[in-house]
Image (cartoon, rainbow, N blue to C red; front, side, top):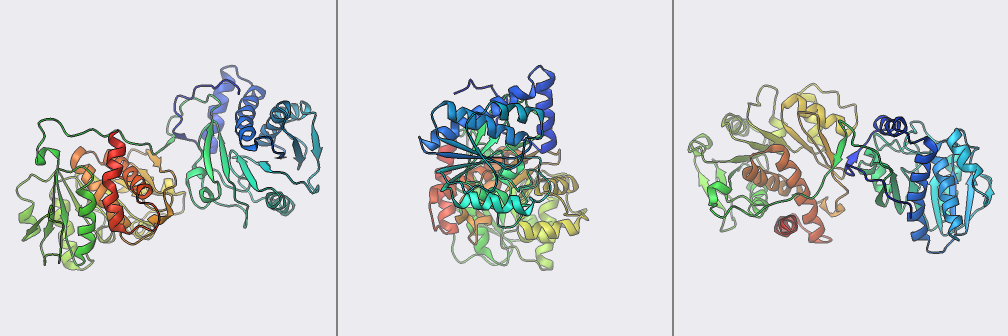
Length: 472
């Protein structure tokens, strides 16, 4: 396998423009395009070789440098005894791709050939594509995909917008593996494209860290409480109850397992029918309950309700000057001018995000990362935009994308569990961005640990196991 070129930041996620700038920086430092293509093609070729395990491989090559990568992959495989056929969809259109084509001495067929094999490597078009595939190209790609049981996309699948994750054509094939070249791209972690990519692996070509790049959510490094800790020092979290107290109890169940030293359910209204014995329930006006000044963080929104009394609770919580997490109904009730100087995390799903965009006069016509960043800037809060492609945006413009989590998270109450987990971490850290990162990672890890067909209650219980992993 070719020698790796150390990547100083393997978590970075680069747009097309950022990736081009990163490659240009390598060229400016003396690495020519041909050498970069060799690095990318040989690194990807090693993955293909291992997966092929001696079985025949078909490489589909397009006209650009992604096609050039494909010619390098094909040569790399042939030199190692793998039976490889190249489908030349179009003649190379760049000097580097023509050079790579000239070095391949194996079997080449045209786009109409009826080619079969064990593995298909898609190098038709790469990450710069912004227009739909031509009808003939789409038909060819589908035909080849159907005749190969295992499919690998090189960089991004052909027909995908790398920056937005949008599918530029209908009914594109799915892949078992996608090999990102040089850096992750937004499409690797953004719906709908990400669900078509299978497993994801990164091929390092030595690009430097890019300023302003998004990052991939990483496992946090949590620590046990200090030796002299007590429940208040570890963090007192208040969770505001409301019209549907079960949601607040579910959030509290997760919060109790995510590190806060003391969790209180603040009930200005009727008490919930049942609560865990370790959860303290307090009654009375919310303002009076917040007067002692010991709360490290508040959570408001799960089960809150949307009537006038609920709005008054939200204003009281926002006026308390305590770091807080706003979820569910609190997001629907939030208006410009209500946010104070307190540190905050907002946790909208897509429907709530659209409401907030209307409330704060934001366009909503952009990528999910840009939309989350716009809301963070407008509110001064850290935003977790929830969904199968969850991401975090800070008011300073930093974006973090989460890897694909279990699809079993699509269950009622999973958002309450996330809110409680983030709020617990906020009580511990007093840092909204850190709490958002830690809470979102713990939520995804808990879903993995809970296995298939879990309930939201089971997910909340699994937060403790995720904490154990993060402490290891």
